[in-house]
Amino acid sequence: MNALSVFSFQENHPVRVVLVNGEPWFVAVDVCKALGLTNPTKSVSALDEDEKQLFSGDSNFKLGSAGKGAQSLIILNESGLYTL
Image (cartoon, rainbow, N blue to C red; front, top):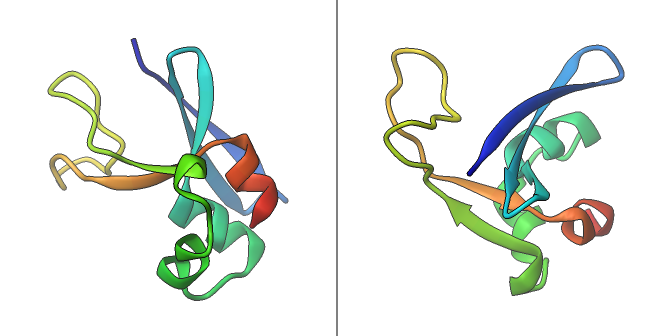
């Protein structure tokens, strides 16, 4: 089961977090925005493969905004978060 939480970083930067098998995974684009990294693709490409994964959710679980439909997003584990 996946559960979504949203944390605020310095009050202005929401970071979505999804639990995958009981472990927190952070939405990469949210983390990059919160850290002031302007090129999330480049930032994430430097991470080890075990620090990131593609998350597309399922029909009962959406990370996207209302009206945007299902999205596939790169998510980071705790190690990937600290590496960024």
